[in-house]
Length: 88
Image (cartoon, rainbow, N blue to C red):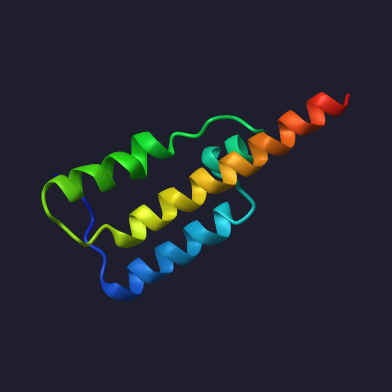
């Protein structure tokens, strides 16, 4: 298939290169939250959590926590934006 196999040292180097190249980037979800827009957290993490729960898998605790954190922050930013609009 032409895919190159990396050993652990090469893989670690690749990860560090990616981190350095993207250190100043912001995810689309982060930007959505900051701009008071609805995020895709339900389509991504929420869906994965619902599927895992339906299958009786308990390994999705961290994923559910992350989705809940994004929802809460999204709600706070939205409330702040609405309040700011009302005061204008």
